[in-house]
Length: 318
Picture 1: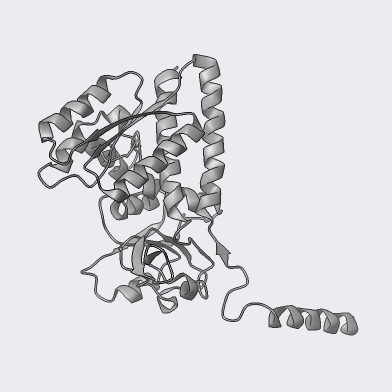
Picture 2 (picture 1 turned 90 degrees about the vertical axis):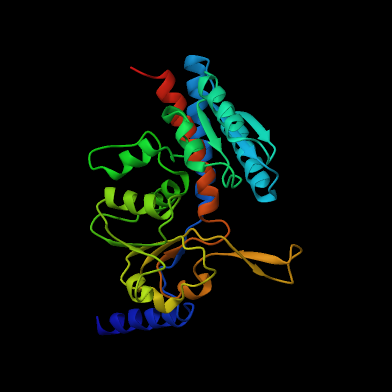
């Protein structure tokens, strides 16, 4: 027994010596791109079955104002994903000079169109248009972005469920679920408090019985607060601000940040990085999403999921 025990110990030491230095053996990249592709296939199968039963297909209307290159790219990605899922794409491109009344009319027309089950107005809007007014005008039954005040209000309340949850925070929670991360009873920190990501992410974590802290620009000693996190959702928009020393050993990180930093080796002259220094935090965390390839693909996948849920709600009512 002593000889066998010594052999096992020697093998253990041999393996340990060959593990990457300063990185936990269990570290996993959270591959948002692969998970999003799986979800796309699941949605496509659901909608094929729905069409066979009802003869109906969902429709998603995207309204874009102005000619911002990033918005155009994002809209094109959404159209491509709609095709993969079996969702009909509708769209309206308006000049940056469009009046608020004209934009409201476009939204109202899509509200009344029975072939449209989801409406998305691409943000940001020009300064002369009040975003809150436009978002509130979208029918709550078609608010697949999840920004209508009634949907956000339901998200805030115990015992209430919104018809739709904002896509990026929903994608963050879906990643945690698909990676088998338990949220109940864990200390979760959300770094950032935006209406689009930070606040709804914190509310979703609360609904999963996590203990939640929100760290923001006025937080005293944010590094110490983040270091307490079992789960960190970072959405502050500060390139690679989070280093290894900020992270509790074994923490799970969902990095929402998408920040451009100069890089002469790239054709565009820049590269995208997250709020977290991925190479650094992977020395301490147990899991982390990369940027790109983490949360970004999940945001579009959750938009498809919300649209699919909308059409099922419309045609599969009991």
